[in-house]
Length: 144
Image (cartoon, rainbow, N blue to C red; front, side, top):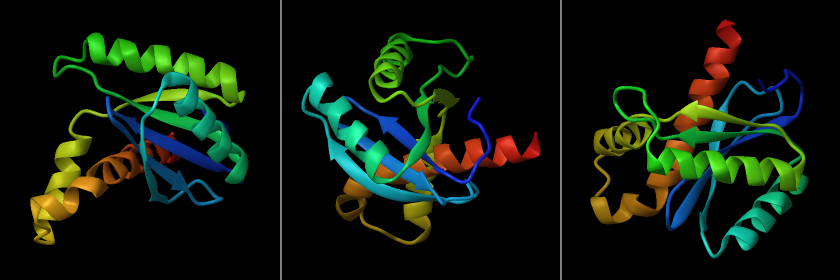
């Protein structure tokens, strides 16, 4: 579990081509989109995340875990678990996994409410999903 503290948390919505990133405020109570990273290779992806961890004084990372509707873990989720382990070893920051079911759907609903066209929203969906994952994690931790 990520410790309480005055340092930021980073959230990742990991896809095959892109990683959506969100960051918390220093009190770890509010999440906001950070950036969209286009994946290159495992080594370069981890190096980019290592730089972000240092730059933003990250004390914890939350990776969205794409569970199946019945709560089971599929191939994609297994890949995320493996990535999270490698990331934790590389950056020496605790990495938690958080159920991300429906986070992308929720991001699409938010854009629908604001009448964003599909073409305009595409670059932002992964960042918004990362924000939703992180905010859900932060809120759940506050409740206990």
